[in-house]
Amino acid sequence: MPVWWLLGLLVAVEALHEVLGIGGPDAVFGLGIQAALQVVAAALCIARCSFEREGRRPWLWIGAGLWAWALGTVLWDVLYNGNPAPPYPTAADALWLAWYPLTAIGMAVLIQERVQAFELPRWMDGVAAMLVVMTPAVALIVQPVADRSADTWQATAVDFSYPILDVVLLGAVLGVFGLLAWRPGRTWLLLGLGIAVIALADGFFSIQQARGVLVEGNYSFLWSAGAVLIAAASWAGKPTADFEGDVVGWRSILLPVAAQLVAAGIQVYGLFFELGRSERLVTLIVLIMVTVQIVISRPRAVESGRAP
Image 1 (cartoon, rainbow, N blue to C red):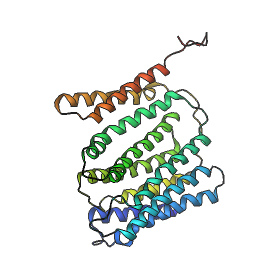
Image 2: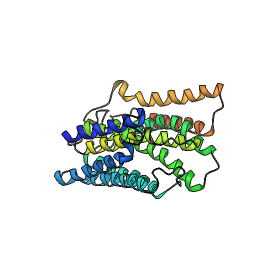
Image 3: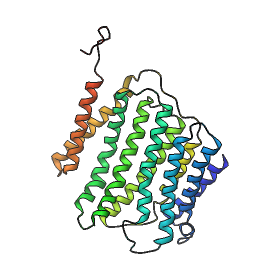
Image 4: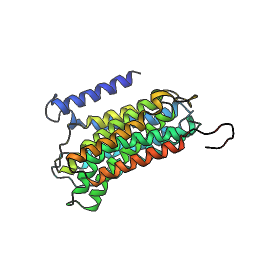
């Protein structure tokens, strides 16, 4: 559709302005292009529900999440854009945080409608992937937030909420990928990519916020890009149906092995540098998860119908 090319071009224009300064000071950002892109993305996601009745329930939830995010951006631009010392947190943060539960509900409905079989070992792959994602998030974002004591409890809670909720959503998407034998199709691929891009922008923001150095505008295009990708997912056609067949070979063990390597790497790092409690906690969770996965995926005696 031409509209996606236009939205992609606008995201590129925003990125060029923010990263390279093309267009002059605030020539692009000052026009509210980020808010406009997010509003259009939310409208397109909801419009999909009107044009395509089948499978519209999940996109109503996800579209509502995009609207919450877009309205948060509009509110920020109206009240705080250009303010050298804006309050934190604000009502915009409440709207941005509302995106997470609304999107999670939409994803759950999408899973319920399109994925029939529930296979716990594949979901454990998603847990492993979530832990792999969580490790750098803990080291770079959560731990610096935990070490900072000057903020109010409201600011600290918001600081924690963004990275933790991002990791939960990413883990859920990767869990679906594992459930679909890593053949997610265009819908889940675009949805997962959009969530990952938004999580990346949130990570940049949280790191800067934790260090007390906030540089506004040089990565905001990532939020616009994430919203456009999620809207594109709603128009990508019917999601991949339930995967029939067994997952074999390296695909069946790749993520558990990766999780164990991450846990081992953390311990090797601890031999040379000081290791925080949060990193040790992640290592412990990884080892417990791998143990549980070994137990639930162990071979069973088919003849007797009982596990050995």
